Image (cartoon, rainbow, N blue to C red; front, side, top):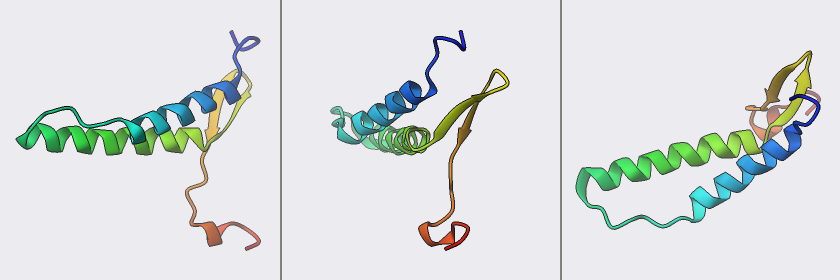
Length: 78
């Protein structure tokens, strides 16, 4: 499987999913269900966006995502 799997394609799919979550509407639900839906959408967006920004590689047969969580000015050498 590793020979046909492209980590960059997977990252691109996560980027597309993040954009889809950001652009989707809210269905006609009310009350606590509406709040739960919005909170879940926020979590989905954050998860997909983080993976969409990752540098993905395959190292010794293991899929590795590197996600820099530092603030923009906190990178080494900055």
